[in-house]
Picture 1 (cartoon, one colour):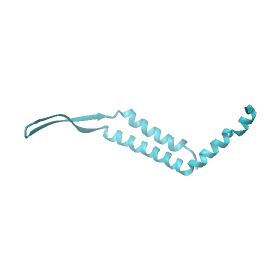
Picture 2 (spheres, helix red, strand yellow):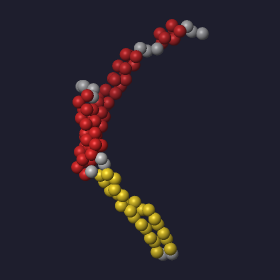
Picture 3 (cartoon, helix red, strand yellow):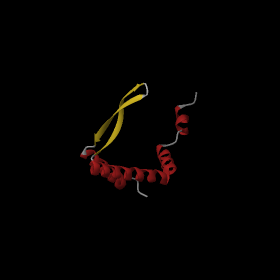
Picture 4 (cartoon, one colour):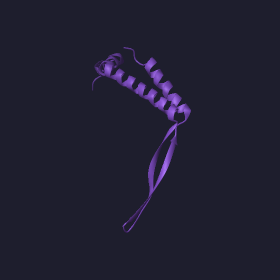
Length: 101
């Protein structure tokens, strides 16, 4: 059975792992972070501008011989102002506090 010391010597120190992970993500990681930040900002602006969205949902269907009945309901989803403002703030913070080039 190997000693504890020999097992530890085979492990990589955390600094090396962190540097390797950062190098592997490189510019793609920063590009993805910026895209996510911009998507949050745009979504927040749209949420504040429109305040919600609506969609049509088919709820009841009946088929009696050649006659078909369908009841469609219009559903509305309201987006709170705090959610839109929070998305904008989160996006700006990601842009400002994210990794520097």
